[in-house]
Each structure stands twice: as C-alpha cells, then as structure tokens.
Length: 430
Image 1 (cartoon, helix red, strand yellow):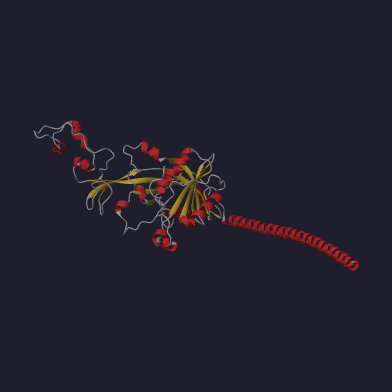
Image 2 (image 1 turned 90 degrees about the vertical axis):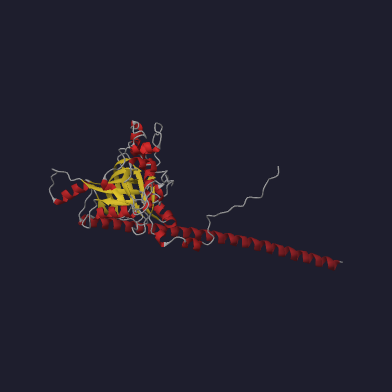
C-alpha cells in the first residue's frame, strides 16, 4: 500500500543556532549556583546503592539524579579527576561526593572541583529513607509534593564560631557551599520546603587520663562526629475549628450517620441530641499534628498546603525524609584526592616531621620527574635513530633502483646503435 500523509518533518528545538546567544542565556547568578555529583566507586552492597540514590534526592535539583557511574575505574584519583575534567566545564560541577566500601568500613569523600580540597569521612551509621518512612505514622510523600524542585535550607549546628578548629571551620564552609545561598530579601516562602541539618557532636569521655594536653586534644578529636538529617517542612493552619480545618485540607470525615454538615461542626443534631462517637471524633487532632504554640507563626507569604494563606497563623512541623547519616572526619587533603594532608584524625605529626615528609615527597616527585624526562629523551633518541636507519635504507633502495634504470637505459642505446649500423650496411650493399 502506498504511504499515506506527507513526510514527517523533524524539529530540533534543543539546538541553539547561535552559540553566543546560548552562552548569554546563562546569567551570572546561575553560574554561582553549585552543582554536585553523587557517585559510588567499586563494588558496594545494595544498601549503599540505595544510599547514593537518597543522597541525590537530598542534593536536588542541582545534581544528576540518574547518573551512571564509571565502574571500570578502580583508582580513586583517576575517577575523581576524570569526573572533574569532563563535567566541571560543560555542566558547572563544583562538588563530588564519592562513596566506597571495603571489608572494614564505608567511606565518603567530598571533593571541591577542580583543585580540592578533599574531605574523607567514615560513615559510622546510616538509615535509608525507606526505613525512616516505615516507622512514621504519617510519612511525607516526597514525589507527589514536588518539593525537590527547589534547593533545601542548610542549617549547621554546633560548629562553633571563629575560634573553632580549622578542620571544623572547613567542614562547616564545605557543607554550606554545597547548596545555593538563599537571598532573604527575594526568596519566596513557598519554595522553602526542605531543611538539611548538619549537627556537629563532640563527646568528651569522662575519666579518661592522658599525659599531656596534646593527648587530650587527640582524644577529643577522636570523639567528633557529624550527624546529617533531611526534613520536610509541613504547615497546618491554626486559629480555626479543628473540624473545619480538616474540611479545608480535604480530609472528608464519615458523615453517614449525620443529617447535615452542621451537625458535624456543632457536634449535635438539630433536635439537640449528640452525634455518634465516631462522627464526633472525626475531626480530632491526631498525634502527629502540631499543637505547641511555640511552633505557630504568622505567614508573611502564602505557603504550600491548603489553608496556609498570607497573614494567617499556621503551625510548622518538620517531618524527616531521610537519609540519616552519622559520620566522622578522618582526613583532609589539599588537592583532589591528592596533595598535602592538612588534617588527620588518627595520625598526628609535629611541624618538623611534617616538613621532613613534605621535603621527601618533593624530592621523590622531582626524581620521578627527572626519570620521566630521561625516559622521554631516550625514547626520542631511539625514535630518531630508527627513523635515520629507515631513511638510510630508503636512500640505498632508491640508489639501487636508479642504477638499475641506468643500466637498462645503457643497454637499450647500444642495441639501437647496432641496428643503425646494420641498416647502413644493407643500404651500401644495395
């Protein structure tokens, strides 16, 4: 049968003809937004794979939700440098979070691209989002509410002030820079739907004796941990009847034994008889609804949810979404998974030892560079000798061909001379 209809015309709407115009679409404010990448390295358990997916939901919307890792790369520095080289320029990647697992521990490396620093954490405990939802009475549906379309609010608690330790300051700054900064003057209240909490915990062991102040400092640093939690903000209107509030929130009670909606509101029928117990308690507050007055605020703008309008009072509550992490900082490196070790939780060196190690590393790097230059020079010299040998063979072959052609031309001329002489003799004889 003949083909019906005209030929389909393809339209590529995602292609911009003018690249200069496409680059102009990215404003200066958009370039300042940090973009993260959460990956796993090597073989890990299925729970760790789910943890990576949960962490990507935390970092939304400025992260790759369905990114496929390069499982062929076995070296850490190769994988991080590969991701940094390929994605920093085109996609504006600023942070890489890499999870790896061995028989002893589960590690997470948080690197700032393209040149570091890199923070290494040991994950002590973690809980997945699905495990947290299983124990909640009223879990928050993160997919239907679309709260991942806007970045969360970052709260850093108990990290200290300017007098805190350098590694504690670095952790606080790194956690804050992983998410976009909020402009209080222009932010919209309905976009503030999530909270990410980083709580710094230091547990000083009582009764622990040490010989000096340095050992006490080391013991205190060994007990430092960071707890990470992810919450959703839920608002409920207050100041109105509980039953009316349930109707506003589209929570329809059981009205089968009532004659009118007014009976449900007043709690009694038109004749004055009380309503059934089930219908009367249909609007009672559940255990998970906020009723503390300290959590009640007057909304300056409209917030998500029915009944949360401007200039009205609502009660705020945090509902945990997950995942939940408890981790310990073990090492800080100056570069991208390489460079000088700026901090180590278990190995402590005095300035003289650190200087000696640095000098030794520099000497080893210099010696390695010198050997590489020598190897490159040897390779260059061998290639030049091989090329010269090939050129000599080519010249000899051309000379032999030229001599052969000369011999052939010489033999042909002698035969022509002999033929000319024979012709002359025949002419004289005739």
